[in-house]
Image (cartoon, rainbow, N blue to C red; front, side, top):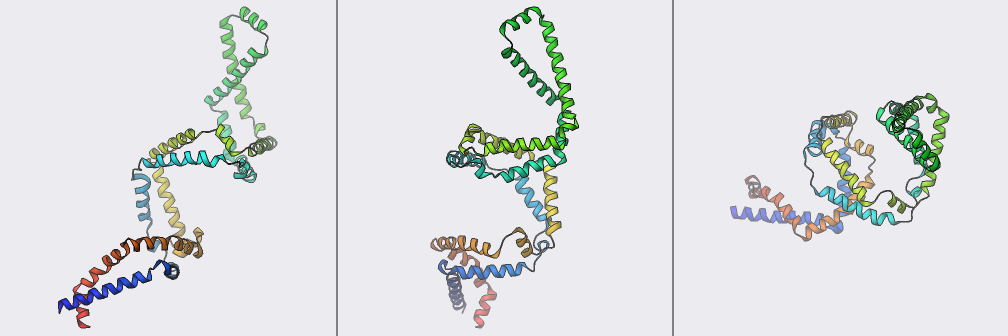
Amino acid sequence: MTANKQEKANRLLDAMVAHFQETLDPDRLDGWLEAELDFLLEQAGGLTLNEVVSADQVLTTARKYAVSTELGGGIPELVGEMVDRLYHHGIQEERRVGDVVDEATVTALVDKALEIPLSRRGIGWLSRNPVLLAVLAGGTQLGLKTWFHQGVPESVRALLGRRVPARWRASLELRLQDWLQERLAALLADPWLYSDDNLDALRDLVLVAWQDFAERPLRDLRDLLDSEDIQELFVIGYDFWLDFRHGDYFATLLDTGVTAFFDKYGESTLRELIDEVGLTRDQLLDDALRFGPPAVRVLRERGVLDAWLRRQFEPFFAKPETLAILEGD
């Protein structure tokens, strides 16, 4: 009797596996995927985010991958290969810079930069920064010295060199630098510099410069950055990220972001959340039909689908309770 029950269970198992194999036939999978997607979307309308997952669960997962997980060394190498290929192939086109970034975007960015208080305060902070003032004064002084050497006749410079002692010239240079720092500080701190008229003039100057730059072909960017420069910039940013993610400040930002997300969407249904993100049923179905049938076809051809189905159902048909039901039949 036991052998008979097991044989019947095996036949039922084969029939169930065959049923699912038929249901998941790649050539007839479209209707099943559409029906299952509609079912899931309907159920998603009755489940809230907080019912399915908690903020603590998301925080734990986010910390694991953003903070604790050590990223493999293949990422910089992969990015380097991608940058190199994009640089040598994608940038060879005759497209203009303006075809990639339109003037409306640049105008909006410039207007916003000149509008926000941070810009003016930032310039004011720079006007009080001694290091910046020293750099600007030094650059101005270097320009004056260059002009002196190029614009003053050699005979006049030689005469001044003989008549003016070296210590006087050194003292004069120090006094000139101090004077330039004072004047630059006064200029940068002058509210007149940030008046609406001057800012409008600065805006027009930036946009005129952009219009000229926008007419250049993308390949001209090679003169500004080569492939190695871009890769090195990425490595610098990547190294910064590796250090930054271990700090308390990043952890605080991460926790605050996840908490804010759940405060806003925790009581929303999953369907509302999907709609809020901007995903539509047609988009989801299109992706399912694009990836589903080819993947299932490979799984069927390799025997993976059959093996997976049997792993799921064999324990059920081997249970005494199931065999008892079959014996009753």
